[in-house]
Image (cartoon, rainbow, N blue to C red; front, side, top):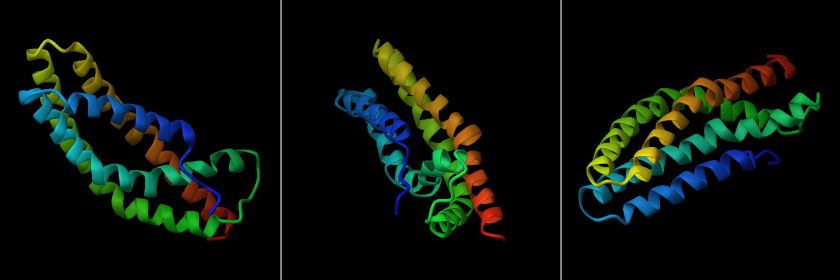
Length: 149
């Protein structure tokens, strides 16, 4: 398959995960809160990259008016996104609750960098729901039009 998660999105996830791993090394309730967030993120990121972010790898080619050869596979992946999206949105809610707890513990521990991390991650989830997931659905709709159904 020629389409992959755009490198900019993948590196953004990796940067957030690196900061979270650092927070997981903290002692006490702060470290526990970070580990809870990481546990919740593990399966979520796999679903997100498989169903929501990979179709976005076609955007450049589609924007140039090209017709990539793997449109049928993209259509199947977007069908998966439609099926998985309610769960992914529910996971965002659960992750956001855990991130608010992380921010609370970071505030109590005097660790403003981790408060900022929690806020950044909550904003990131909103961008996914408001922009990235709908864009992936649009890729699927466009693919359906191009393929004639």
